[in-house]
Image (cartoon, rainbow, N blue to C red):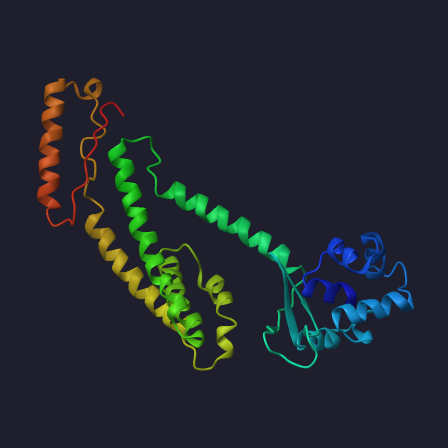
Length: 288
């Protein structure tokens, strides 16, 4: 792999950004990175000084050399909203106000990953917005109920995550993982994720021999699955919209008889569900 490309991406410079910094065209840098053209000695010294890196890391590098680069301390630089990194501090005689980082093995710039993260965030927010609205063209009452359900769920998640910044730094990740574990267990319990898929998310945690998050998640999944089977059996035969398929042309009943059936069904529904925390309106769709 080309070391210049690897270092450039780790330091969060696009071809255009680096070309402006060192005063050459992006095509020239691309040619250097693809071994189509050699770097002059003057340019090489300029790049070494700019990044604060040693000469042996800018040519073709081995996996061992990549690891050595990843183990080097990096220093964060800010220019307005722009964030980038170098292998040298702002000032050579002090580390005051320096932010020292060790970044992961990235094959793209951080800006690329950030743009992708923002895209994913927007997709999730758009999906959540759709999910908490009634999707079948129902009444405003149905929409209110659906919105309130969604707000209750997302609000609970928000309330939990809101406390995360108040945790000690060393506790923040385990604090977040507790919520992630519970959600993963729900997905497994409802067959929306398999154990192998979830296992990949826990590989990093497995490096800590005392971490039992994966095993605990699987145990919780089995508890939730068993509980859901019992609840599903209990509620499977309860009609949430009794009478919704009544059709006077198929039943031969008059409108008055149909309305009477609906009123009786509504009354019976609340006898069965009188322990519900709040009442929801029933909708009947004659002829549907």
